[in-house]
Length: 498
RNA sequence: GCCGGUAUCGUCUAGGGGUCAGGACACGUGGUUCUCAGCCACGGGACCGGGGUUCGAAUCCCCGUACCGGUACCA
Image (cartoon, rainbow, N blue to C red; front, side):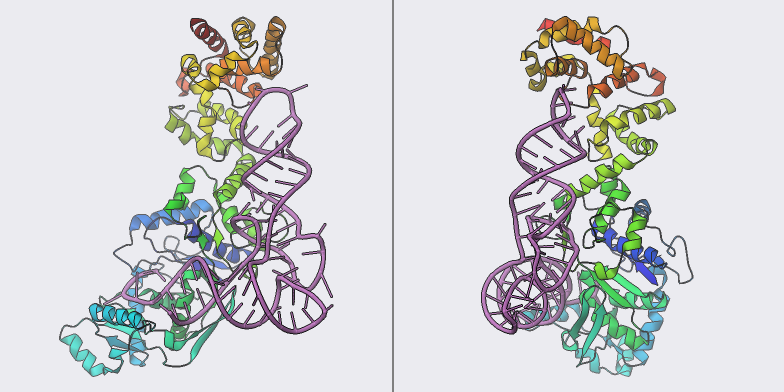
């Protein structure tokens, strides 16, 4: 089995295309097949090298590696259409010679008028075959005279094309709704329908798995395979991915490219797992599955027929799950950039990394994405009693019964660094004895005084983290952190001042 | 307009001639004796409409409707 993913390098890798790539990859890996990457860059106006590089990067990040492709090579190369022009030219000549294609001199303006006229008359717009009857000799003469024709494929005038679609079953199109498609443009570049067929045939692709938007191209392609003397591959057309409003997923719906999801702090295994579940189900009740297991269970027959809505919430839930499963060191490495962006980390030293790693258990599980981790830990780096008390969320706590007493008693109760849970609990007990406050009346004021916030990670974890941070040497590149005792003193002073 | 495709909770889906129509996300309630998030438990929530076939239809057939794709010298 040989499958391929064939993106056009005209922008970022969209999650819908990533899903197509994934389904191809899953099929190849579940069946010991070969996964090929081909770059369809015949549209020179829109194709860019940067896009190509970006797409390759995104695929690798997702873990969708390929066995043959533009960068890794292979026996069926080259793998960029722009490097295969000679092949298309040669097959176009073959078609011309065999009478299966002809030169068309119709101007774009004329074609456009015909199309509008058809539409206005309620007829399906379709090429009228005006140039079908031009003899090869006449055509040659006009070309020598300087005209630049396109080459069109001669679609049989009657009959129909039926192909078997592995997800949808048999699909039939009548030939008379298919206009003669352009094979080669007037500038000599091949058109999509022609290039794919030549490439898929020459690359010996056995299963063409692509988006449903290509289903109506399939009959022309099948006809081309036949005219070229190749046997068509199996086809499978995947339904499309939609936004919540059931229109095609676009920027309006938020992130749509793999690169954006990566930047926002999603883990590749979460995106892969989520994408696999749009339009496919592994059966049974499990849906949290690693890519290898997805591949083991994947079957085209189980792919759904209807379009699926991209659900950001469910992706977020999956991402939380995979963050909890990920090794702390890896998470730390992946999150540093967000700490740096916030100014919480100035340099990436070993001490800084150890510190960040130690903070993770407090944040992972509470946030949806890596990017949100620093915000959850803001209380460490941005302690400011005056600013805190200016906020209703914090100031309101002072009105709670006994809150002021707790805060006033706090500085004296902190006799040394609260290095762990026990040290913190012991300290809290001292305040409890002195003030008679307990439970919420005790802990809520302590939270506010020590973190400057009304909500956040559990104090058993947060307080020792503050002390650890305060003890990090300034050379480690961590933004300065105020220790608990100093916090208690300045917070008490601040409310005394008010 | 024409051609093709699709239709189960809000969303992703399982199932499929007789089921309490199952799961997940989201949502609601309660618990986790500092809070938020998380986690746990419980709960509400669906077979597009109309005909037909059948003892029996969500399931099979037909029609309709809605939605999606295509109808390019874009892919």
